[in-house]
Structures are given as structure tokens and as C-alpha cells.
Image (cartoon, rainbow, N blue to C red; front, side):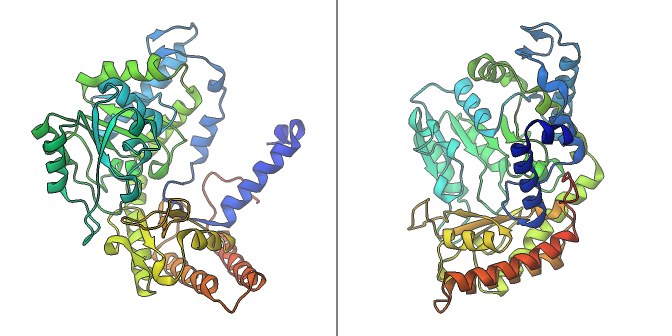
Length: 424
């Protein structure tokens, strides 16, 4: 990045500092990962210079000979990897992909059935603060209080009662396997189009480590980062009968020109995800998440549903005498990066919830294994003890946090992160 340092040293320095942060800290946010060097190169390619409104073979600008081939290649790889009949790879991210579904399949005021945000769903599944909950009649389903898991009989009952036009399945904070086959049956019984939002688990689905949505549902949406390990983008996958409506919703309905360099980077990530090393990687994500969960349970942490089937863990910090926000801030100071998160039936607000959410895609990309998961659990226990210790003042806690951050950095030095420029 020598040219950037010359042209804009201030921005160059900020990137350098972020580069160092990503290396020195253990990233436990389940929606974050590291892209490969090849994906990063595609993101920064001259493809970003080209404007390409429309679709391959149907553009509004000339000079698309190579761009069309790039997008067609990405579409082909997406369909093959996920077993879809059609793919739109132009959405700028997962939320615009979901908005395109609403535009294509619903009218304002129509009913959508989606997972409650407070129970692990996503903003775009009908949350009141989202356009999906403001322009459409949103009905929410949640998890059982006794098990923390989805109650498919209740979901079917709600669908029969409210007759939604669209049912969203998929989650952003649900640690168990999602039964796409059952959701598909509910959709057929009620006449609803079922949309699987696989943004969090796309990498697991691609690798066969989690059941896939097809042929059970009609539409699937996803981001292209998270467990898929690509750039920050989005995709819509669907059966052919929905292709035209969804394509028209993306362009010209919601977006103008696609981000060609991102589409190229997605194509690279899809190629990587189709290879055997990625299948092994996805299996290790789950192995690490379960090892981390078991180590945390041994240390008295309250895991929602008691563990995980996928890449994430949802932890209620109440039993440790902390809020999610206090734990998240203390962990960050100690070199462990998570996010505060509501837990189902939380009595606290989203700004200061009871829980935290952690996951293993990024640490697995670094090569961490079960032994490192045990070390992370031990650090988390120490962080919770220090933060809850009333005998320590702020300065005393900071000393403890810095000591742990040094230990974390030493571990990170042993596991260089993919795609990061070294030295840092």
C-alpha cells in the first residue's frame, strides 16, 4: 500500500492500525471472518471502475464483454454450490437482498411471518424498527421458554391462522439446526412462499455441515461474508419461477449499477468454498464452537439451549452478575471481541441486554482448534471475574485487562490471520 501512504497518509495509518487490531485480537463475533488474499485482490481490482446497470447480455452501458463473463461465472458457481435454479449476485448486502424479496413477492400491508428479533431473528424479518415491520403486517414466532428451541408446531399454527404471503426462516442468533424441510411443508400447507435467510450459515450449508434450504423452499437469501468467507455482499437464490420477479426487484427496483469488483470477489469465495479444504474448515467451525461451549459450561456460563449445532453461542451473563454490554466492553479491553446481544425473553433493552453472542468462523480461519477454545473460555472466565469484582476500581481492572490482552496477542502471533498484511 505504498501508493496509498504517499497520497493519503492519514487514511493509510488508520488502515494499518485496523490491520494490526484484526491480527492482535481474537475475533469472536460470529458474523465476522477473514477473507483470503485472493478475495481481497479481486475486491481491489479495476473492475470497480466499470458501470454495469442491467444483467449479463442485457446491459444499459457498453463495454460489458468481460463484466458479463465475471457475473455469469459468479452466478454459475452460486447455483452449483447451493443447488439453486437461479441466482442474483448483485445485492449490495443481505438486508437489500431481503428487501428485494418483499418488493418482488409482497404488497405493502401483506402479512409476513418471521422470527422475533429478540429471539434470534433478523431486523429484516419483520422487526418494528425495520422497513419490513413498518410497511408490512409482521407476525413473529419465537423459541420455547423451556428449551430455547423453535417450536415448529406453533409456527405452523401461526401460519395457518394468519396466512402470511411470505415466511422467513433463518436467524442471526440461534445456535441450533434449522429444519428447512419442515418450514417448506408449513409453506405448502398455508400457501406461503418460504424464504430461507442463510446469511449466518451459508458457509456451513455450502460445505454440507448444515442442511441446505433447497429443494424445500422457494427462495434463499444470504450475505457473502460471515461463514462463507467472502467479501461484504449479498445473493438471492431461488427456483426459476421466481427469477424474473426477484431480478426486477433488485434492478431496477432497488439498485442501480452492481459492484463488479465485489461480484468478482464473491466468485472467488464460491470457488474456494467448493473445494475440500473449505469442507474441512466448516466442520472445524462447528467442532470449535462445541468445544468452546463445553468449556464455558464447565466454567459456569449460561449458554442458551445449553450449546450449539452451528457456529455461534448465545450466553446470558446474568448469572455472572453482569450485563451483556459490561462483558462485551471488558472482553474487548482484554483482546477478545464479541457483541452484546438480547437473549430470548430478555427483560433488559437491546442497548444494554443480558447476553453476548460469540462464534468461531474467524478463529477457525486462523487455525485455532479445541485447545485454543479452552484457553478462550478461561480468559472469558477471568474477564467476568475481574469485571464483577467490586473490590477493584477502574484502574485496577484495566491492569488486569491489559495483562490478558498481552497473553491474547502472544497466542495470535502464533496463528497469522489469512489476508492480513504482515508485519503488523
